[in-house]
Image (cartoon, rainbow, N blue to C red):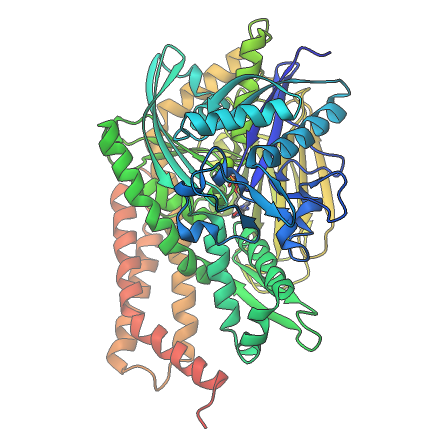
Length: 635
Ligand code: ADP
Ligand code: MG
């Protein structure tokens, strides 16, 4: 028997298992490479072994009554605790007043802890086959609000799965461990914002000498990614192609399941892309569905759900008696927080003043709060953090972390040169290796034939002030700006070698660059780089702001100029002159750039952009109107 202790996130929609191996916390994948297991169990009608995870999920639309999902909601609860709408689920729940809840399946029934036990047993097998060892000790996580009966039910599930549960820990605590927050200054305060598939939790933690204490916790037991999916499905049903058959579609569980799956997939894609196509070739015998879906539309549908979490955040802070400025970190967990809009809104809720880990999906150009607020900590894999943290707790318990030397970290930030010659960090300094990070890039001008992938190392804002590690070119067929897409992935393996992979997302062509020296810099070099970045921090920020505004100005003036060409009849001569005047003002500011001090210039440019934006409102509306009329001519 191996003495390793597994870390298990027994989630409402997904579960995951992790272990600390050779000092690294790792998520263990099943044979198909899945790192997350749907918390779904299917009980075959003829008896036999229950099916778990992806296999069970596939049965949900065909055998809903025998396929149990979201069972975590019912753990350790009694029928009398249930609200009527909680019974609104694909399978049947017992009604005996006051008894523990059971799932009814024909003559037989099963307790929620046994369903969870099936999930846990599956994860145990996944871990054993990944580690090629038998493993039976585990740390399992539960929400901070779980009461004693709910914790006991979780323990019982572990027991039934043949696991020795060494400890039950809070999900937010596990997340904090995964983010390395136990290594922060002696005393810190953290908010953990966890938006999963069906539940939302916000927890304020205080850490003193490496021990976490829950100060307050709030949430919604019925709010999460699924609600967003549902809003997307409703939006799909309003599409012209589907509207006519809406009634028929609503009646078919299979069709609705297909729509829901397409909605979720599209939502995930739009965390990376701005547009995707919804394509279901055989939604019904005669109905082939195909239409575009944009991030902007998704955000409109998702906003009300995300905004509902705000009140919980405020209440939790109030209960914990802390102001947002008193928080050190706001940590994002749960798959739904991969959505860029969630990150932006949460950053606003807590008045975060900076971001950590990935800058990739955060919208540029947004002004961060000037006042010093908490850091918004955005992990690479927010849905894996809890299992990783549980594994870290397991390693602490088994003592294996004590013998460990400090984890290897990246000494300096790694990134790429972007438009305008700025450094775009993909892997921040001090990230623990091995790790992966990626981002999608596009072209800045029409008919651009190639993108230069220039790999940089260093802490300075301007690309030219950092060290160049290597470069290569990704070619394209000529197309309008913004259309070509290149996914770039940085991967640092356990040996400290950086593999840079660039994939043309249209053709699938790939190029790889291997860089040996990424981790191999001397302490002296690191110190010099960090010192120079501090020394030049202000002027560097100046340059970044200036360059960002300049790029924005370029885009806007180009767009305005080309709209003016089509504008005849839409606006008055005065309006046209006003726009032309704003454009030339912007050009003049850019032309008279003073490299010594740019602060004033940047502000003037910002003002110019704002004015041009206002001056073109009318024109933009007119053009939109014209386009709409062209697309849908009045009868
Ligand atoms: P839970 O804690 O409820 O088990 P997870 O943390 O695994 O759930 O989160 C699942 C939710 O996250 C689902 O609604 C899923 O659609 C959503 N999700 C997963 N990946 C992404 C993504 N890339 N973009 C947006 N949402 C995502
Ligand atoms: Mg979760």
